[in-house]
Length: 76
Length: 134
Ligand SMILES: [Zn+2]
Image (tube, rainbow over the protein chains, first blue to last red):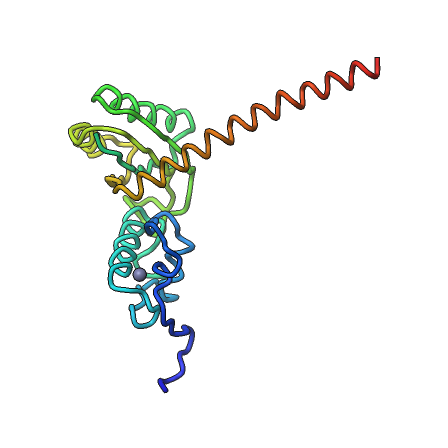
């Protein structure tokens, strides 16, 4: 039994694998926000259950969204 | 030929006419350099998540092109010296993204056709009503 999580429920399965997501769209801010902390930092794979491949895609999408300022680097 | 997605953030303080002129200049460059503009969606003025060139807001335009790599090179050269542009990002689409785009374009075309058909049908109904009243 692990320590109880404060905000995030640990997930066992990769959401993108189970939903058969074709690709992660960097324009989908609502989706990306679900994988960030309140301060805008990327949540770890362990926290979200995302598989290694999809975590890489997710990271790339988040970087792109930050690049065009539709997501911030750090939430104030 | 590749498919590219290109976000351009224009200075939000520009007038609508100046925005249109800037978008036209970008489209013209792509076409003149052997590309095709598939999409030019105005997302409009939005708050930036962080300041860029001392700007808090930007006017977002999302372009999609079918073009050879050389066209994109020319485009990027323009952006670097084109004052209305405060930021840009060009992405080459992968096969899955292209498939998704094609589906979206087909769905939009279908919707447009359905809307046109509906308008014609409604017009016919109205004409019928007018006739029966008279
Ligand atoms: Zn996965």
